[in-house]
Amino acid sequence: MSSIFRFLFGEICKRGCFVELYGCSECENEQVLMSIAKDAAAFRMPSLYVDSTGKFRPERVLQMMRTDDATALSTIDFLSAINPEGLTDKVIKLLSAGRYELVIWDSPAYAFYETSNRHELGLISRMLSSYAISGHRVIMFNPLVEITGLPAGHTYTDPYVHLRSLLKKVGNRFFIEGPGFKKEYVITSGGALII
Image 1 (spheres, rainbow, N blue to C red):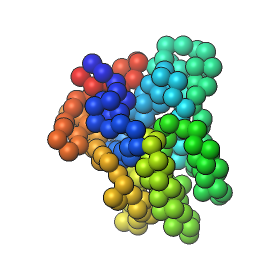
Image 2: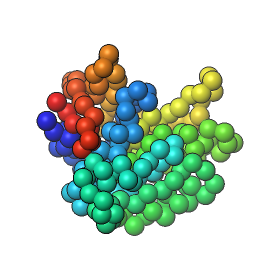
Image 3: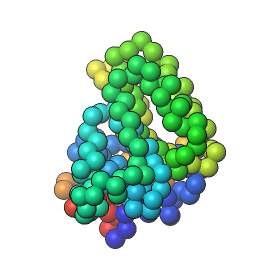
Image 4: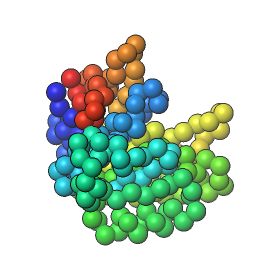
């Protein structure tokens, strides 16, 4: 078994990679993203976790790491993106230093769904594309959201996305699928693992 982090960034993509993951909540997507954050912290990789859903739990990442020492998360910065007010400026400021080797953004369109400034989602996604092109790793989960038939925004990441993968649940089994691969994964106390 190997981690989804090792699979995505060891076998599929290297540095300078933009990954879009899609899936429903039944796929345990938060557990997958927190597992990726956990592995980045274990490798001492400076990371930014942007949460638009309010579901990120640092204590769960510590639990996956089998520690209660909060300093284990010292390489992960967290940004709540539930409120879009000033979000673009915050992201620009954080990324401008180039400190983060990995950026994880859970459901970026959620922050902009009920606002009139949905064009900012496109601006942020183009900025993240540029960040990936300059040698960093970026993961967006469900970058485009449509609720009650109204699109929340567009990410404008084509042609910069290197990998689009689908997380899906079939019966009691979980799979990650992409061009040329289909791997089963499980959620364990230590995170999401490819089996």
